[in-house]
Amino acid sequence: MSELTVAARYAKAIIDLSQEQNALEAVNNDMAFFLRTLKANSQLAAVLSNPIISHQKKLAVLTALFADKMSKVTLEFFKLMINKGRGEVLYTTAHEFVNQYDVIKHITQATVVSATLLSDANKAALLAEVKAAVGGEVTLDAKVDESLIGGFVLTVGDRQVDTSIASNLKKLKKNFAQGIV
Image 1 (cartoon, rainbow, N blue to C red):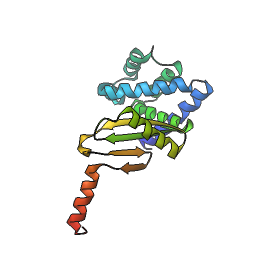
Image 2: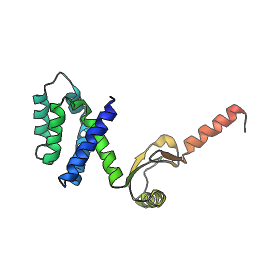
Image 3: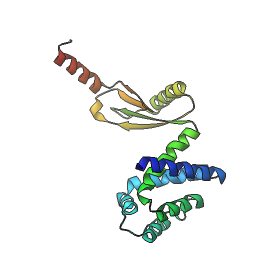
Image 4: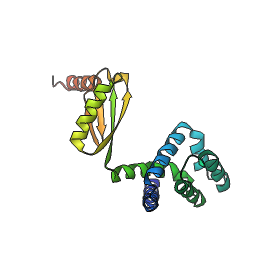
């Protein structure tokens, strides 16, 4: 069974449990915090996925790091995952949890990559356009990539709008190479 399939099943289980316990928001915050922590500390991710490190040591590390920062439901879930030898899928499970939470709450993730930092007014206008197009709540993540030269690339789910100058130049170069222009 693939790691993603396993993670999706565990994520569904923790979502169901957290809904029963009326702790869905708290567990979502915990999972987001856990993901940020793992992204910032690759050594922690390596410890959790290392089969040589004992379950007790992994549990001790997780407890020391998160005992006073996470809900009991999340900590017990982590304990269960470690005891079942599934430490290597904790990151993917947390990621899947956030994805499934977003589906439940009708939250759409959008990413905009622009050549320069977008102003707050531009972000607000772009966010309003995306909300109008998809409906529901939208979370916009803005990034900067100077190689775009100008314009932006907006990604919403599996759709992408590319208005960057770099992309237009690549298309023009391709057309010249094919003798179309």
